[in-house]
Image 1 (cartoon, rainbow, N blue to C red):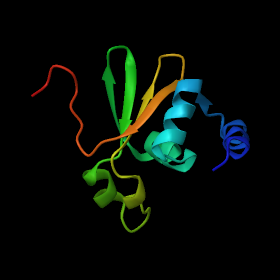
Image 2 (cartoon, rainbow, N blue to C red; image 1 turned 90 degrees about the vertical axis):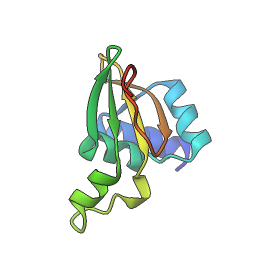
Image 3 (cartoon, helix red, strand yellow; image 1 turned 120 degrees about the vertical axis):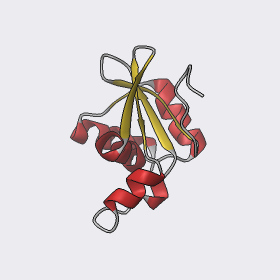
Image 4 (cartoon, rainbow, N blue to C red; image 1 turned 60 degrees about the vertical axis):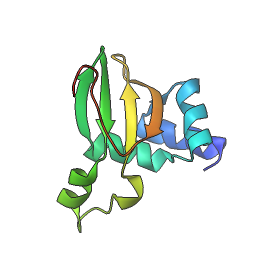
Length: 100
């Protein structure tokens, strides 16, 4: 997805992306669709004043065959209190700070 396409997508959906999040999405090959899927279907956890949305194996299995999230498994989206997406990354594990 090009920068113009992403900006148009954000305007249409109301998604607020920081410049940092945009750079991380571009550099890590994470699409706007993956971010939207995490926000819509992902597990949400509060941590350090932010909300982290995560698409894990459980979400993929729970929603199949209605919604195919396999391509988005492992996507994490960190959202600040003001609703701004501050960063995105992909990791197969989720560990909240302070948990073991």
